[in-house]
Length: 318
Image (cartoon, rainbow, N blue to C red; front, side):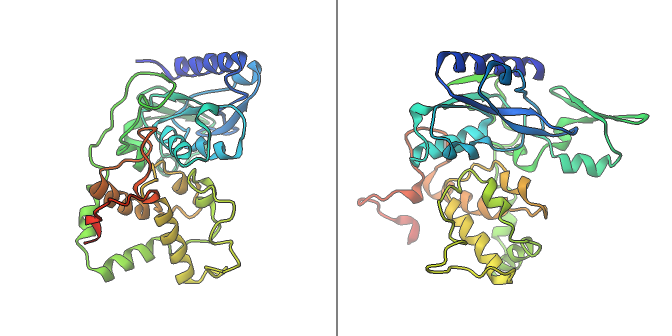
C-alpha cells in the first residue's frame, strides 16, 4: 500500500506538472499546520509552493469551498467527498469544467482530532502517522492509536472514498467504504412520533451561536446573499431566538437536500460541536429512496430538486 509520504510526493509532482503545462494557475491542496494534528489550505502557484503540499489524516477541510471564488484555471487536491462537491458545483454552473482539474486521492478516512484529544489530553509536541496508526509524543510519553478507532463519523460511512469516476487522475490505492448503509441508524429516528422528532432536532441546535461557521465552510453555500442576511424581505431575526435558530438550520438543510456529500465541513467548523449532518442525512436518505440519486458521482446528472420535468408523474408526493 502506498505510504502517506509517497502520496504527498505524487501530489507535489502532479501539481508541478500542471503548473508547468499551464493546465492550472493555482493548485489548491493542504500543507502542514502550525501545530500537531492539523493541516491548512495551501494555494500553490510556483514549483517551490508545490513542495509544501502534503497528504494527511487530518485533511478534513473540504477544499471545494474555494472553487466558486476563483475564476481561473485551478487544480484541486480532492478526497472522495471533496471531488463530489466539486462535481456538484460544475453541474450547478458555479465552476467551469474546462477550468477545473481534479487530483483525486484515495482516502482511508480522516481522523476525529477532538476524539483523539479527548482520549489523550496531554499536550503533544509531535504527531506522526502511517496508513494504520496515529502516533503522538509529548514530554516523556508516546501514544499510538489505531486510525480506524478514531475516524470521523462521516468517514465511517463514506460511499466514495476514491473519486475514480470523476477525478482527472487518482493517486493512491483504491479504498472501499467501511459501511454500505449511511442511513441505517436513521431507522430508529424515523419510527419516532412527530413531536419526538421535533424535540430531537431542536435539541441538536439548542447551543447554536448563529455564527454561521457551518454555512461559510459548506461548499454548497455559494449564494451571493444568504437568506439569513436578506433584509428585503427579512426572513429571519438576527437574535438567538429559538425558532429563528431552528428555522435557519431547517432551511439550510432543505437548500442542501440532494446536494450534500456528507463531507462534514459544517460539523468541523462548528465551535459548539453540533451534529449538523443529522439534518442533511434525513433529507439525503429521502432523496436516495425516492430518486435513487447520490450527489457528485457523475458529471451529467443534476440533483433532483434542482430540475423540472413536465412528464414527471410526481409519484413521490402522492
